[in-house]
View 1 (cartoon, one colour):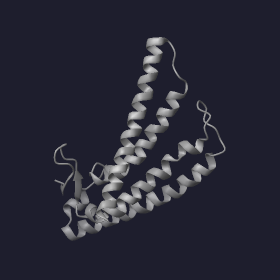
View 2 (cartoon, helix red, strand yellow):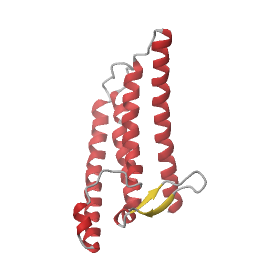
View 3 (cartoon, one colour):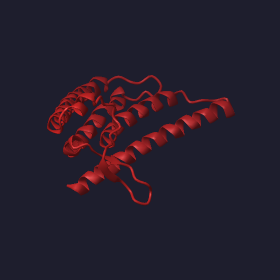
View 4 (tube, rainbow, N blue to C red):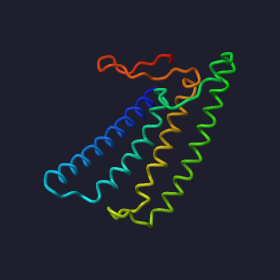
Length: 171
């Protein structure tokens, strides 16, 4: 199970990195084209926007693992540890239900937009909307695999290039 989880994290990180590299590449290309040659591509703004949305949705599960999601912890901080764990389990349940509903609605949104075209690229809007169910499904996978560690507040802290990922309790 640990190998599957490590593979999920690696593939997810690669996806986010490729998406962000793609955004950088097409925006840089468009800036050079516009200011260097007096010509820009109309599709770049739309494509970059859709890729950034995909990057944000796909990176949410990774942010959860690293403790980088916005959280208000005042209540759990003043409670006894058993009660704090119960509050964190409640947070896991709420995140799971929310992302499950988002996944379901995202699939419906993709189906709704599939027969409509985007303005600049002419591709089906459903393709761009795939960011929602893909990102929510990835988040749910991360949450299921990481929930117990989340409750214990054991977030993954990225290590340096030599030692790799390091898992330790958050401070």
